[in-house]
Amino acid sequence: MLARSASGSGSRRRLLAGLAALGFSLATAACDRKLPLVPTSPASAPARRNEPEPLAPAGAPPAPSTLVGATFGRVVTLEGVTVEKDIVKAGDYLRIWLHWQLAAPSQEDLRSIGRVVTAGGRVLASEDDQIGGRKHHLSRWKVGERVVDEMRVRVTPSSQPGEYGLAIGVLRPDNQTAVPVTGRSPSAATWQEDAVLVATVEVLAG
Image 1: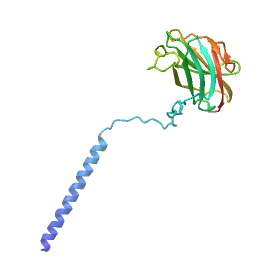
Image 2: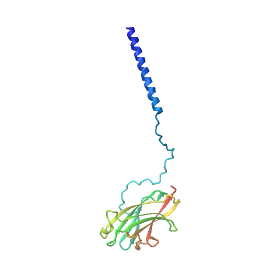
Image 3: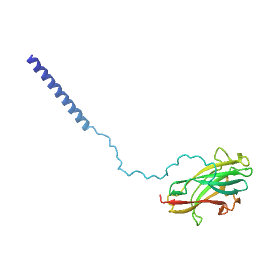
Image 4: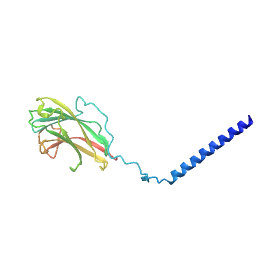
């Protein structure tokens, strides 16, 4: 019995020694094999966010918060506007709702343009879009029909803190020329003869 145990113990030692030798030979072969060099990029600081945070969806208000009463080209009237926030950080979006009414049949699908302007008339930011959106062209409206458009104007990130004006105008779709203001209420102040000042906004440092 003792002899068998001694024999079994010796077999186990030989097996362990063989596995150790095999492991050593595999490790040696792996060290001798040339591994491909993988370039590593140096750690870099996280990229700075250049785009503003997207605005959450919001429904159009049923009535404007500010009455305007300006007619462009005797065709479409900007009845009023609603500015979501009159304080915005530089680099962020300023959301506006434009309340339109068709005054006469339109042969063109006119566009609206919103501008953030200084007291001296310099344009800091602008955005234009089709009145009525891409699915409800102005040329399909019925006289008297009302539509509310949402516009988002991104304030230039380099804008200096201060108070600025918000001007709304109308453009022709073919050559982007301005449609003149042909009628306005006493409360609508004109801006460069082809747009109206509808609000003031305060811009904070971004």
